[in-house]
Image (cartoon, rainbow, N blue to C red; front, side):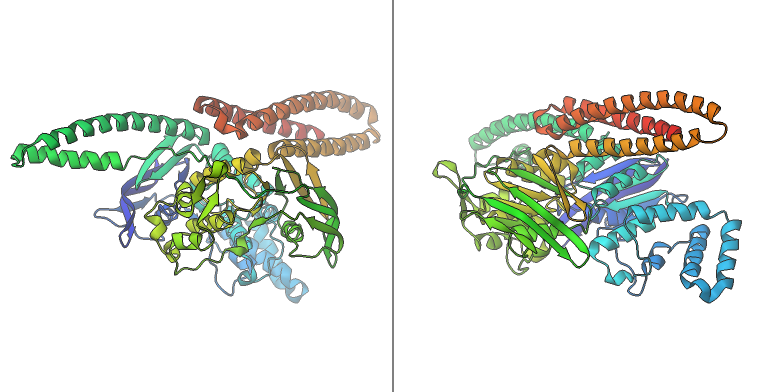
Length: 624
């Protein structure tokens, strides 16, 4: 059954055609992702599908099944100026959700209106809304939404995104359209959202750059390339495999077309000046063949051997630095010396001090105690979300040339501003476009290049993949792998961290920063094992308390049997987690694997996740 369908849909802005006559059917229960380069129309296509923008083109149509309740999550949600979080989250036509809202509002009033609270309680009982209320509270807790009386207008962009996501989850629609749902979410939130979206009853169309999200949630990936849609069944690794095959076939056809064009051009040169109707027709075909050959796209690889500015023996050192604001302890006695070519990832929930920590390392913020020592030759390149200030009246090439004309490469070579732009997917034509005409993702890509063009030797990147497309992220990863200096990355992009970071600074709260020597996936596996052990210890205490009751003999016998089963499950889970860490480590180094190997690893990772979840559920039932 088709739940959503776009037919012959086109969209353009002035002379720029984003897509022309595309068809996109989405079946009930499908989990489809749309991928494309920034500025090619991904978000616009989602807005058309959601009914926000009207489709263009003769006979164009956007169809939504009459039984499908549709919800749309944009990149930047917009709420009414005077709404509170409670009003925004509970804005629904669902009677049970409205009843929970009435109950919450009555609770806020408290003793001021006991009659209203009693009425709300009676209605909650009548509609059996308590389970819904519990699910709503769990959702708000998972998304770290605490003050439901706060005005939405006072929230940050990330907080508004989480409120909009909470509203969507609570309303439980049948058909969901989401634009970059993982932006502004921390790692626990992302994994929780993954679990929720895997519900087979949901139908999903989304844009995301999170490749683990694509791997674990999606069963179909559609690529918007050159204004056309290419549909691939399967998850992200299947997409890579099938796309590589498409390029291989396309490349073979391209070679044939080049040979044909060479022959046709030779024929055209031999032709006399007088043209017959037949020869004119053949010349028209030559023109078409030239256009086809000229428009052929190949998979370009980024290979830039940057010389970089020399790092001294002393690069960057923090000596027992601490920082707090009132009772909020952000960093406590952190001590570390950076070494050459280190790649360090930083993870932790929002609000635990990551940005403050970066500010201290760059000496923009003074620590309360301790000191930061920056080497004489250390030159920072600091990419952060607040630092993006681009002149909209300048052309793209002018922005980069205003910083430098070129970057020095090895062996005395130079990489010009125009060449660097091309490597990061700004072709010569786009380089002449005014900054004000760029999409949000294209502006972030350009801002990133303004940092790189300064030729730093210590890069600090604060959420660099937000709003970037997968193609650009792949280019950035290859650039950073070859970068001769140090790299410090704050990111919620798990794939990005796994591919680049050699070890992780984990912000655990209350000033504690753990230095984890390993990849992100290895850390998450270890964390889950520790959490499981804590639950196991809690289960032991519960079993011990049961032994003390009067019917101790029978209960004790049962607990011994349970203990054997629990130990068996724990051993199985440990083996599965160990295998998962091994597979994740291989998958993170995907560029060294063949498409078949990537697909195989992806399927194995999915199977392991399912087995671990099943075993953990059994374990939790046993320990009570």
